[in-house]
Length: 572
Image 1 (cartoon, rainbow, N blue to C red):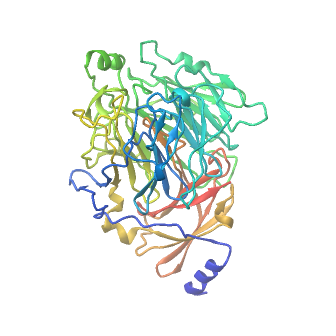
Image 2: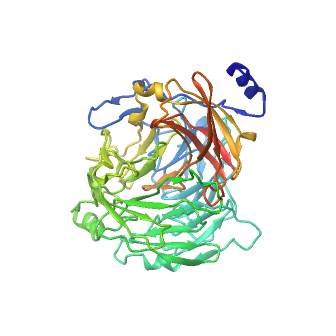
Image 3: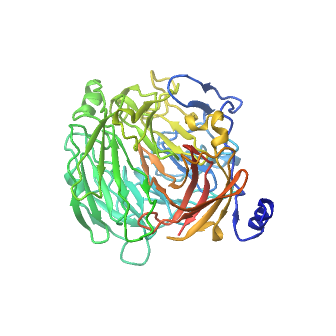
């Protein structure tokens, strides 16, 4: 059968044809007002997308329709972007403005580089979120009138969707808490300031509507004023369905169904604290499902924790204006080993408040933050302008880190970053002040939005870059342990380096923790050439929801280290 005939059959069959895919903007292009940083130092480069989006990007989440929801807090007064059509928010409990005609949330359209203001009713300051299996953002907690609020945002393409506040509250106040979607589709919310509990959403008529005491959170809280060092705990869902929870320097394997700690892991070596306000970051390294035909076998799982601050750094900065150098260390722990031990590695530069994201290649990027101080208002100096690349599979430990091209913009407290489907990193925010302060020196409030282009987006790699033509999966869904096919075009195929198919869960990023972030490298069953520059790859879906909770994932095909633009695939 010729390729043209096969393509037509794919088009008119039940296969899903990619209708919403978009191309990466050229590496030398930007918006009319954008400026680029083409520094030759390190790899990649930066493009300024907007000098101002009207708000500081404290929280970000990529949605399944290639739009990014961005929001700040409401209790500082007016933002720099108005609500549309003269609309205003009326909130008698707001601490700054009872009537506010400005927006504190925007929806960013990746393809058009445009913005739409949204209306959030209560204060979302230092809150948390996760995307449910249907693709709706479930947003939890905040400050003041937002302490125990539940909010949703369901993506749409007609500009009519907006934030919805649910009438059922959370059981506890959740300020600086963390969320994780679970294999059964529920979302667990863990911790928060003075909240030594966890609870589940959605709330229903069953018996899971309350909260549950979690002693580990009380035990890991430091007693110094403002030095809790266990807020925004790091949560990672492991292949056995239990939850890895890290706070301060300690970590446990937690069975949230039976409300019991299964095991406690060794304490992370070193003096540094790793959670807010001594803010570091953490990721679950990519889960490799290659060769796992036996669904009873589980892949190895490894957690990495990087950056943070030394004991006493917070009061030294807040009270004495002395800014202690941040941590340079990263710890890796193979949590599925019978007797796991932390392996310590040293970053090229110290970092507090880093954002750590998994790239489509399986490498990590560490960006944003500062070299001295801690999180909190005015508590850090010496911005860390250079991203750092980390190659977790590089056998030579000395060659794992690479310093990349610097940004021109300091991304201090209250900045964030997310991976986009086109492979860029979207970066925004930075407001280390009680209010918006555009005259503060040296770090004024920043409302800009920029993108970092990793080196794999360089035009010279275009012949190696796969382009997804179609996904052969019923209703564009991948069933657990079922197979699906991806048809792709490729100018030059290098068989020695091969092709991988990966699923990446889009993260909700705030305060240096990309919640729900995970990558699965799928088992490729068959690869065949169907035309001179076209290939069909058949991959096996994740074996179980413990490995891939139900929901929408970005599917990337990577060839010779160069990723495609992702398409969205629903796993259930």
